[in-house]
Length: 477
Image (cartoon, rainbow, N blue to C red):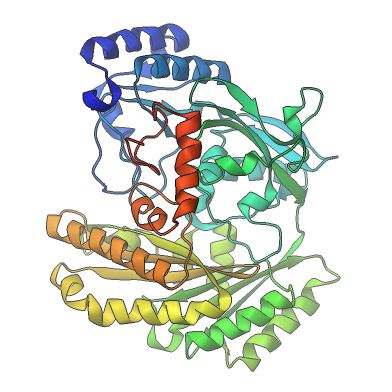
């Protein structure tokens, strides 16, 4: 670490003193337990301990801290709520900036249909506030993702559970404020004009906002975000169908998408009764005048694809209570603890064109049931499931295996599965999102000059590699 960043213990102690002067003694901690807690997300990837954890309250404080770190060559890692399973991998003698204290809703503009919040605001809390005013975020999520922060959702390029056009997270992001690696503060979109407000993303030159989407904090620390909002949908209907094979299910969803009938569709495979091997959950939203017709058409399409109607109660519970477990009709507590044994989940993800989904499923089941079966059984790995969240023109696969977290061999096999499945998805034309230190070497190594351009950008704006080193880019560029 010292060879890379040129710091020593005296530097760290001096930095702690300087940072304490900025934020005060109550918003910096060097306690061992705090450093452990903020050194990782929910994964079991190896990590090191930072020298301090800081909770700034303003963008000015973040800027001052970044300038100190830059001057002293000390790396900074950003932390929201740590709710991902991607692997944070903090470095020793670093600073962790926890943005959860910057959680205010700054403005709700019902005329321009935007909401602006600090980066640490929680997605569901923002949505709940909007509901009271008759509005909602244009990008609607459900399940565990709604516990993420607004800034974290942008930095991780989190996946919205939506099939509607123009409602992915990136589609609804209007602009943001960020602290660059040198400590400068910038705004993107229309808000870059000091006389304007955050209402239009595609203005004032290049789309700088997109640079930070999915950047995992490597290009800058996001401190404010602005998103599109809409009138809250006043009516919701639920459907659930099982299919004899996933090709029929994909064909049904393709027709549902092309007729723009649904807000949400998710295909569940794995950990299901045999008669429901491919279970499709469908959410339809709208108003009294249109929703029943949409529901009738959706039912007809599913039946024409040989779908069998199922009780939609679990679909409703998932959507209304946000519990991901209802997708399989099981209590949440069974997801990561089974027969008293705790498990970890080395997630794998990728976008696919809808016509390529069947071959991705074929490859997965061949791998899980044959190619890797002996290793998985030896360490008692199990399958939580393989789920596909359908976007407007494709599908986003989450592959969720489980391995005993107290068994070192099981952890190693889990990491192998993550690596090998990421490689397979890339070979099949899959495009992972929510990229982190565990997947970046695999994904970016396939991108050729595109990755070289990314590294050039990183080196240009962060020549000392201060922000989140090793997360998306090598520690030495």
